[in-house]
Image (cartoon, rainbow, N blue to C red; front, side, top):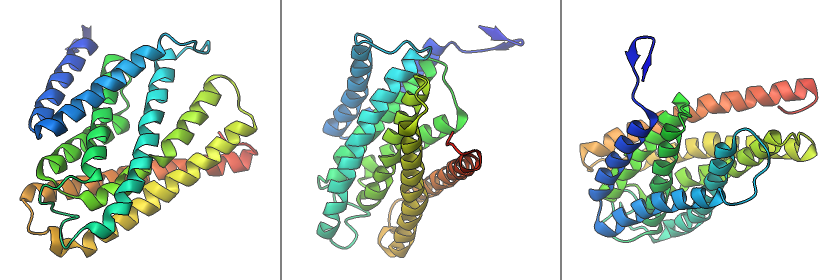
Length: 263
């Protein structure tokens, strides 16, 4: 198609190109890890397809309704996984939490599940032309980061505090579900409060504390391949993006308190 004289690639073409790229990236991983990543991407697609057969509320954005249910499943899975990852911290010897010797840890499993979901969500966004630059940038950033650390078996320790940031997602989706069905009552206000609290606690405060922990351990990851330095820069960029979102969350909360209700 053409828009204002500029050739625009079709959503289907973009989706297929992205899918091929994700297959190629997954192929670079160890066989079991790559299969788990691709299996997760495919599984979420099947779950999304199965939701089409369920009875859905009469709202205009049915595809987003289904996708937010899928993202809620992913978020709950990752938050539970983060607890297992935190529990492993005492078992890491010396630099093992930063540069692994190839041992199988919970972060390897849940990082594969995480990137598998991100791949699915990017495919969904491309196919439905639901492109928000900040969300797409977030997903592509963490797809690149996660594939690299899985390939090199880096950063088992940081994955715990990175994955727990998904705690805010179920509350965000609950808030959207209620708004989409016109149910802006007490339940909506409660979800808004829980979302803001979880977001600020994990994506602003917790993420920031994780970066402090990362730099305190710099002597342990400094010998790594230079590619890990790029990962660290991208993780900081992810934190900056979360701070931008946090400022919007705080701003919305302030406006809601002034008007007597949460948006």
